[in-house]
Image: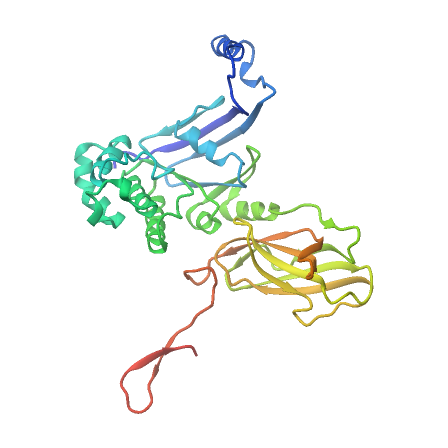
Length: 409
């Protein structure tokens, strides 16, 4: 590799306009005039349909440094990457990337669907800046990594989406870039290829190249990145180590006012997690729920307190545990305090814990407490959606046999 690059954003702002930009000649003429005769501080003049997608973002990533940008959808993360890769230009400020840039963004984009896989390798490689000699030298390695060698001379219009992702990822990661930008691409292909792709990204990130990562996979961010920015509404709201930034981000997910039905027999005032918001898969979350029962002896179909565990990234509910299901009956009118323990046998990620009063007959919440979030880190590696904490050991068979069998202790 000839050089190691660097990545810099200096006070970048990016303005977009809602709706169509030029519906008529009346709109077009003033816009062109403003562009060629900007006048005083024209970049800061906002029209009624304008908004800032990125607001005053600055950072510098030197060789050997890895920076993550995290935050909710719509925070401006991908816009920053588009500015760095020159897909679009900043309204204010400047971006600079020294050296050949490798951008793992929309990795299956740019394929010509009437060409074969072989032809697309040469086309994509040329677009990414590889010389013909480099392509010929690395062609076999690219094809082997993609795992689609038997289909390399088939037109890519007959490829599945997973095959396209495999080939695109393989090409993009064999460019030998001086600087690397990664945008949420570690979900490509099947589970086996995801592990292979992650290993390749880890190899590139550890090679001394400056790396910028945008991802909702916080376990990936924590392992790959030394530091991180948290963005909200286009601006940086926190900067620190990867772990500090993850804790800041997780602490803000789902925080909002509690909802109370005026006719609800129960109010949930608070949910507090006691053992921190960073735990490992398989560990217990210990929390306290405080609330008030507004009437004694509730009907059987009213669950005074149920705890929902929701995947904060996908939004789906993983588990619901009710107080009655746990053998606890809350019957006395007045305040109550519950101690709750949940074993988080789940994949790494962000999960919200929501305490609700639940009407089982109508299947609706009659009261919702303020949610809290926890970030589950990887512990024992596993594939799937549930951590079963599996163990295996070899035992000697009885009856004089020489074989062994795998069993749970």
